[in-house]
Image (cartoon, rainbow, N blue to C red; front, side, top):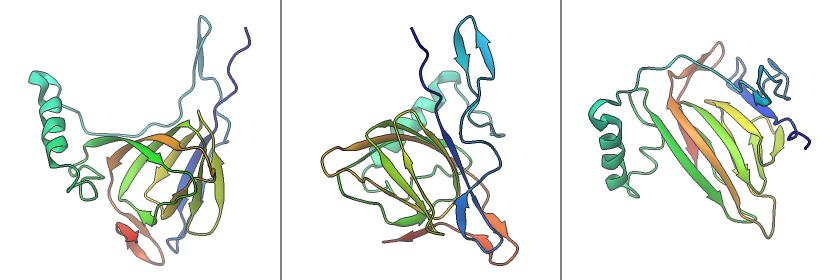
Length: 178
């Protein structure tokens, strides 16, 4: 049996003027980092993070509290304050798009069904396919489903970060252009 095609990984960044773009710091194709008896491990991204408390189901209690606050607090709780992590399943109907927005977060996005188009504030875009990974680094962007018939589903793992500070525009705060 042939192996699966190599997943693609898109890393985003901000320039000195606060304009968002697709970084060329690493290749798009994810290389196999280790072959463990046929299982291929590919490291898509890594970062420092605070330690999560799992003892006495502390993490599950926080999750249950957050669930009770939905949907009213969904936008406010998109990114968990204090460096915590939110895992979102995001489903986009055919032919629709999100507003142009920036969250002050590191988002690991995995496309699982359909396609989604990711457009940066500089106008550059990529068509993201199932299995592709995007490392969204507090950039101004929008998501759009190019299909007229098929829904898109991706999983977004969002971790609060410090705001990006650029040389020309200074601190880049959260920005939602509804």
